[in-house]
Length: 107
Image (cartoon, rainbow, N blue to C red; front, side, top):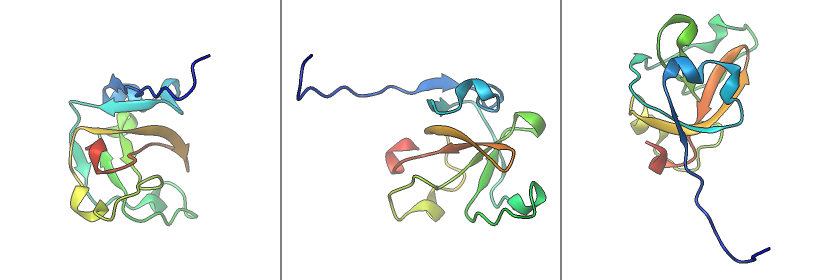
């Protein structure tokens, strides 16, 4: 194989409804066409053990996805809240599908 070559990984474009399914867990996605429904989401309503800060929600009802800063490397998370579209890796935590942006370039 070739060594030293780099390839960029392109995100898969999905709706919030698609991202809220298990089909995209672990996949780099770009959620487009969504609407911010809660800019200060309290995850303790999902699970009393959840105390994750800085969450915000996009989409409606069962099709909603939380935006989570677990992988975020930049210092401007608070300024990014509500910014769409959003790109990141999908995960499941406390029963909710979450997208994890990596840097400010994911907005």
